Length: 204
Image 1 (cartoon, rainbow, N blue to C red):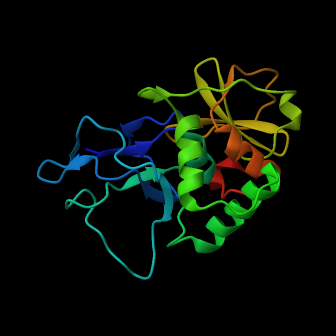
Image 2 (tube, helix red, strand yellow):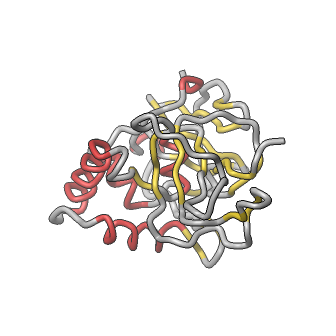
């Protein structure tokens, strides 16, 4: 039985057998005795995207009172859920994300805490995922943006939309319209300024 530690593009933490490319965390969310989630879905505003394999370190998943290991199909999904690259295990990616964030907003390089505070306001509407309006045509959105349409999540890449499923991405299709942005607006700006997320191989 899979643990409840897979994150969907809607930010939900669910139990799926899906294998993903990245892990990450939002703080301590679980009971190590039962390896089940507690009622909280975050205890820190630093929602991170981390490597699954870093310096040969091994952690028992949900095995202690440390951060709760969450897993994402790919980086586009993690970004859509409101996470950002980790400055410790993914320093190069984190620095590039930080630089793209600053370029897009015409600001000096923000601290990790500053980005976390902005993202926290964009990722949640009380305890639910915050949906954002889409400004402009879909064709103008950068690769890696995730949209909500008719209850499904679609990752954009190369002008096509790839529907997220529990098995991976469905075959690409043209998406004529969508209901909302799942990716936080500040992350959309960073993607537009040149940040390139890592995609799951099923996206093609």
